[in-house]
Amino acid sequence: MKKSFLFFFLSPLIVFSQTKEILKVREFRSKSEQALMSEFRSFLSIPNIASDRQNILKNADWIAAYMQSKGISNVQLLHPLTKDQPPAVFGEVKVPGASETIVLYAHYDGQPVDSTKWENGLHPFRPQLTNGSLLKGASMVDWKMATSTFDPEWRIYGRGASDDKAGVFAIINAFVALQASGMTPTVNIKFFFEGEEEAGSTHLHEIFEKNRDLLKGDMWIICDGPVHQSGQKQVVFGVRGDTHLELTVFGPKRPLHSGHYGNWIPNPAMELSRLLASMKNENGEVTIKGFYDDVIPLSSAEKTALAKLPPVDEQLKNELGVRRPERNTSLNEALNLPSLNINGIQSAGVGKQSANVIPTKAIASIDLRLVAGNDWSRQQQKVIDHIASMGFKVVDHEPTDAERMQFDRLCMVKRSDGYNAQKTAMDDPFAQRVVRAVNNALPSPAVMLPTLGGSLPLFIFEQKLKAHPVTIPIANHDNNQHAENENIRIGNLWTGIEMFASIMLLGK
Ligand SMILES: [Zn+2]
Image (cartoon, rainbow, N blue to C red; front, side, top):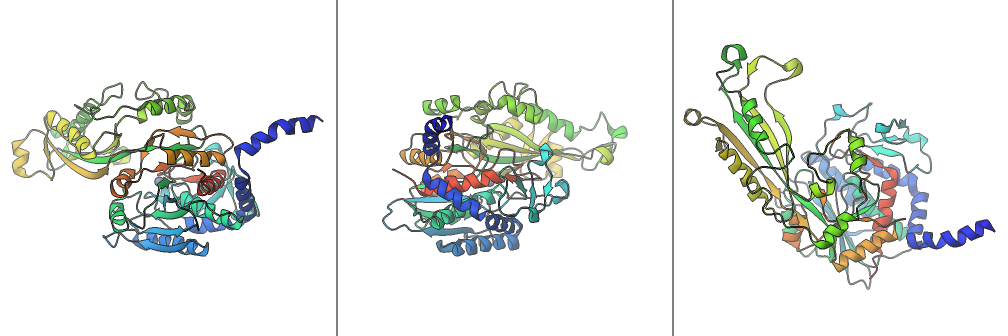
């Protein structure tokens, strides 16, 4: 009696939260875990650094063959004009009677990697199964031990496991699962997998320009990045832009004995430190003139969405061992402002390499994240103008002898390319349908995020294809993406398949 009473009240909840279509997708997946894992493992074993031409092509060929074997048509490699750069992999599914088209994006290249930094014999391109997060004391699991099903809390360690081969794999297998379960997508689907996202998507605009018609769709949906730190899935309506500067401050032409010359020859590491310190105050506010001027204020829909986000700041402080945030704001407020970060500083050696010298130069890499309203080259210029205002002659080359004798302080600035932030309106009707589809696959609604802190070149999508994408990340937030020990929680991969299958069944 008690049992049926409970069932009466609980079952409608379960039916509401995950549709019967999704339960079918799940059933297919749970029957196919062994095959899926062995395919994912093969995929992760191919090194995927964008500059490694030979291997990057192997990845592209692997994906193309995989898509073909799963019944996806018109599969082809889209090469940029600059022929030796990584191609994107394209494919499509045309659904009889469907009038709308979604384009699904993920990238198959990964961040450059130093395999010596990976822990406990892990190797970026020898995918390793574990029974949880290694940070929480999990241990290695032999692939042979995993027979038919995989615990969703288990993880796979390897470069690209989460960023972003998981995206490629989940998207393709969402379609596979629908097909195998006898379901037809309600929209036409185009697949687009990029091969140089981690190298800055420098040639993406060329691929877009060459294939404008092929890449037309009603909405681009991006699968990249981590889910919300609370563990809830999220739909993201924008990304920050990004650009870089490299600053070199010059000292003497040759390294000098710090005893014979200290106090007399200026030290470039000290000069650079003073310059960098002048860019930000102790409250984390960038003090460069006009740095925040172009920022477009958040819309009221965006402010409402931010207010509804689950609080994670205290959890993160504990997790990261940091007591005081740089700015006196919440994480999400901070992410909606442009930032200035030092990615690295180099001068003479430290530790065993330390010597009593006055170094010849000091170098800093600066990362500028951008929000809506910022223009990447204008933002770079503000930093350069600041350097000049601090008494440095800014040059774009190693200074000549004549320049050394003409100026007290010299700073060489190298500007990288960059891209602006992108935003899609939170009330866009098509985006709202995608949100509903995502929620159909989840036990509780996804979080709506106005902008991701990270950057993706979505500005190029808007500029070249007039597309307004939304991003649906699937990776666990503690995935170590871009660093050593990158990993994906297997449950996140499974939910990713379900979310994208639900999107392929998009409703009105
Ligand atoms: Zn990525």
